[in-house]
Image (cartoon, rainbow, N blue to C red; front, side, top):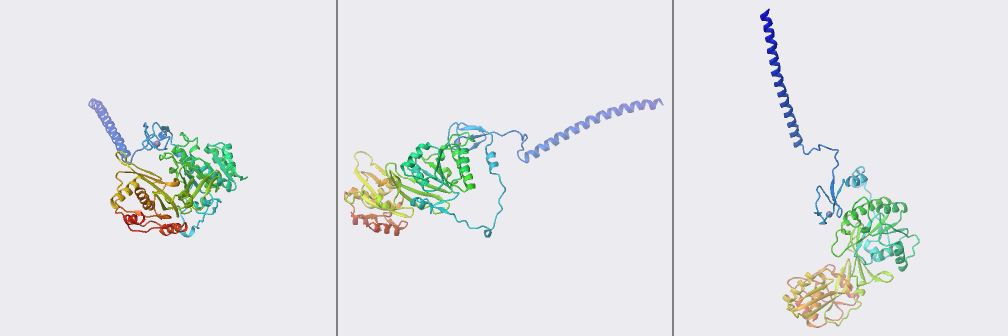
Length: 482
Ligand SMILES: [Zn+2]
């Protein structure tokens, strides 16, 4: 019995030891397994990409108040637009915009199911304007009307607002009194025309929704702003956002809208160019401030051709349509002066006769000077080089001044020939034949190349009583006419 007792004691002691040992062992095993499992999970997380460990935390980003681009980190200079100190901390403004636009996806349709869309056009009654638009304004379309400040945009739009019934003119630059005095000066007496001076985007949208006009003119897109964005009016983000929201509301209501946009000479940042992809029609009004000729060009038109242009003349009664542009640009032309040549250029699809004037003077000191007004200086240098090498007109010690009269800017190669002849005429101090005109592109070998729509140019020259000269080579032509 005692043995049994001892063994019992012994057994329990042994069992206790075994139990203690195995407990330690088991714990170690369990711990190891847990560590392994956690490590394995970590590996899985790493393999499946970055997992947001704290989804509730708001993500802050930095937005450039000038161009609207977003960045994850702050920096002193925006790497996109180059503006200094323009990055501000914001909480993802994009999601708000996206929610506003949220709607169900459209069902794709086969060609048979889709009916043809023919845009109904409302003529403004200003022929040259309608010509560029391809007939008139399309309901529910968004137009961008751009040009340099002071070129005559507001004047032309005031004239249009007088022609279209039920127009709303939103002035964000001038007071209502200033707009009214302009309308009075232009003789606009449209009784259905309404004016409002407003710069806040939300108010503008509310006014458009409640008034539901036929046409709304917003002058200008760079002076209106939305309070949803921290930047000032005219910054890229404001210009884009305002145009986008106006587009949404006018498409819903079927209202036509014209946005005025100012272009600066130095290739601006927040300019209308950023809107070109967004709008349906882009029109540019061009011209020299100190000349009275204005050209309206269509740069983009979702409802018609873009190669048309309209010609206007600034008068004290507003912009007058010019039915015969050649007469406008040739009004002061002197046939007998050396250095004057008439070129036939193409504005859109219309041929126009313009005067080219050149003056060559012996260089007094050092390097000869070349100046061009209304024409590309690099192209002028090429023409001078061709004349020197291919026609033996040595201009290496002559200053050359070139001017396209009437404030026109021409970049067409068809002007090459008239420019070469004007320079030669001035150099030889001999006038070109009376009532003569020229068009043709000059090749580097001195050859005269064909240009676009020659038949139209010939017809216009003939209509105005001008003679054109045809030749294959510049030196041969010079020997014939000078
Ligand atoms: Zn920027």
